[in-house]
Structures are given as C-alpha cells and as structure tokens.
Length: 274
Ligand SMILES: Cc1ncc(COP(=O)(O)O)c(C=O)c1O
Image 1: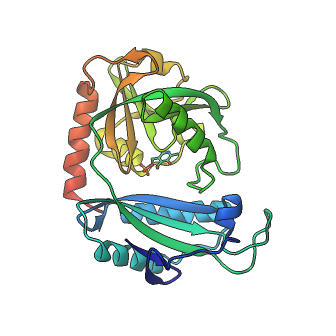
Image 2: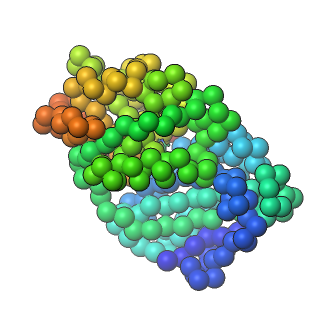
C-alpha cells in the first residue's frame, strides 16, 4: 500500500503523522471517501468540492485541490485494483494539546484500500441517539465520527450493516455513512439537507437521475415505507431488506430496482458527473 502524505508518495511504514496532529487529538479534520474503479475515482470533482466546503465549515484553509488530485492519481497509479476505497483526509495539523488549532498548517493524507462490491441488499436498524441538525458540524464530513462508530457497532450487534438516525426534532435524517430514501404510497422521498444529513454525492446524483422528493419525514416513516434504500459512495444504491424487526418483502422493490438501474447506467456513462 502506498500513501500520499504532505506532498509525496510514501510506503505505509514511512507514512507517519505527528502524535500532536489535531485530527488525532481532537478530531479536527475533514475527509472524503471516493469509489475507485480500476484506478479511476468516481465523481472526484464533486468530492473535492465537498472537501473544500467541509474544510471551510471547520475554519480550515481551503485545500490545494491540484495537490489533492496529484495525491489521488499517485496512489491510484501505485496500487492497481478492481475496486478501491480512496480516502482523502485533511486535518488541522500539528497543534497544542487542546481545542485551539496550531500554526503548523494542515495535514493531507490520501490512502487507498481494496474493497469488494457491496451486496445488493442489506439490513438496517434505527438507533436512539440523535443527529444534531443545528450543531456546528451539521452537514460537514468531519473526522469527528465517534457517534457513527458507536451507532454502527450497535447495528453490527444486531446483524445489520447500517444504523439510521433521527434528528433532534424526531425527523428521519441519515445513516452512519449513508443517506436514506423511502417509498411511501409509491413515491420516492429522501430527507432534505436541513434535517442535518450530509449532502451525499450519491444522494444528489440519485435525486438528479432517478428523481425523488426531498421531504421532512418522521423517523417512524421507516415503519410504513414500502421500500427503503441507502445511498453512499461505496454502496451506490443498496436496498434494505430488514429494518429493525420488520422484513421488507421482495427487496429491492420496483422503485428501488429502477433507481439502481438508472444509477448504474448514468454512472457508467459519466465517471465525473458535475
Ligand atoms: C454521515 C454520512 N452520510 C451520508 C454519506 C453518503 O455520502 P456519499 O454518497 O457522498 O458517499 C456518508 C458517506 O460516507 C456519510 O458519512
């Protein structure tokens, strides 16, 4: 495995960040997870735009996107693989021990690991913890992911691969690493961004390509939904067959199957959809 760190490609053993890096000490950083297929990063331009938005939201200097692109190209060329998880991490850099950020400047890491295609269907659970749609980090892809770690562990304990959150007013929000879509009375809906969910790139492409309404929904919409699916860079569109104790008959249902078909067709036709 080769890692891009602070301007150069390095071996895993020599790619080291400081123990004083603010990403490590207080989770002061932002990141992107990008699907890489045979050495090509899907929707990279959108991911880089979101990296900049997230960095700005945390008050980090805007990342040098030419350098990020160089880093992505370098690791993708160095390690050929059919399907990869390309991970861009950009942190507050070396800082004092505490929440004040230091003067050293940000740390940039680009890494790649091999992954396998997700199954077309999965199980999800709801969790009792809430997303704070009014929090300082709402909608930012920050490395402060502890809440997602806890929720995903809960999902795994229950034989599921994703945990879904409501927000502080009980509205359906998102998963630990995915957005959620539901079919109600034959119509496809997804929570709006003001629910506090991440502006998922797969969500945006699904809205644009397959069409869906952005609707404020209560968390218990999941109990009545005829179909549910998750979207994320590595899941694309993935049908939910079981939510908590409820089995959804014949998932992927017709609306989900059509969205999956359209997504696969459009993504194959344009690897960097703007
Ligand atoms: C909290 C959260 N919501 C949604 C998503 C889906 O976003 P995307 O489709 O851009 O991968 C992610 C991605 O990992 C995420 O971490």
